Length: 222
Image (cartoon, rainbow, N blue to C red; front, side, top):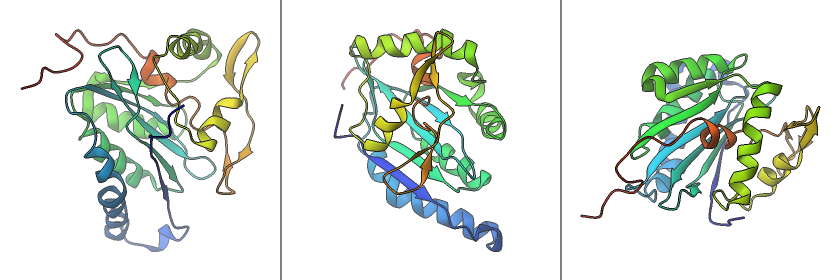
């Protein structure tokens, strides 16, 4: 576990329907500049970057999990963003703000079930086939969770030392012989409900595909 990974949270106001699109855009812009920019400024420009996204709207949260690939293939997490009660358009706005600024970006994987299909679709339109639209199912868990487990065993991924992230991972259980996220609600440190929201997010970019055939994982220093 790492204590050096920031968790950035956005909580939208329940009165968003009474506000203009311009006001909502400004709120998201302010969040990006004030809360996300400092972490983007510390990201390593020479490393390959990707991301995972798990969608939530009213009951659940959206988790945006950027990753960078180190020289030893270690998946490094520069920061994590959680969006609660965030309108669809502002989710798109914040996601694009982050991904547009990821250095040496090579792809992402997104939850494309239900309402998440909208965000995954517009991301694929913007970034092309590098964004994988994922339909979570028992078969998906069967194919991908063993690789996620292997990444921990091989020391290729490290979870942030954040109670809610760890609690989300604790509800991964075996179901019909397959490790998957239980349909169970938990209470986060902020008193709001969670649904294992972050547990599946890093699985997507880790298992989505092989790394691109680049000359080097890290760009040479100049």
